[in-house]
Length: 196
Image (cartoon, rainbow, N blue to C red; front, side):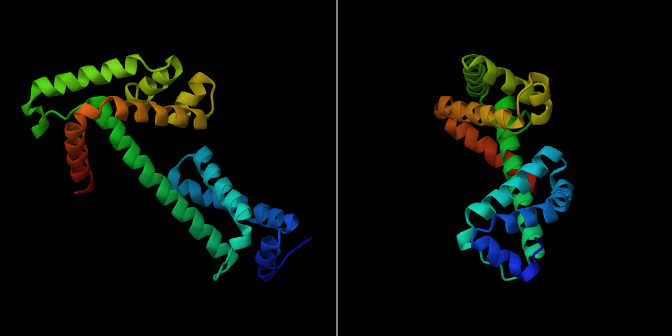
């Protein structure tokens, strides 16, 4: 069955699966093509669009669209892409802090003993990670591989790589609590450098 633009949103709100499937089929490919212009990875673009449709269906009873459905979908994908890129940037900045422990040439090497202690603590913390998590972390942070490349090399999903990296970074935050002041200074310096 074909639905007009004005019919489709009320039908979805009422739980009409046929209307939802019609919307999905009409826009999925174009939305993925639009998302990839922002994130440059097909898997991530598809995931963003799938999440949009998943949330749209799950929260359909609260769905209110004042503009056209097309404008709504493309704006939602754009916002999701920008949020993803912002999150990715922060995550990569934090990971580079953990990897490098400090940036020579900046004020943090004024206390070499403290920074050497931090590096040792980081190395020790990485050593006690579960084998798969440790391997993924090292491939990402020391070999410079992207999540997709790691997933392909290890025969696992990108989601698994992301989950393991998230757990690794959370574990390192816990392990490095005593160096919190140094880490905060590093974060501030890197963010100031990045955003200036």
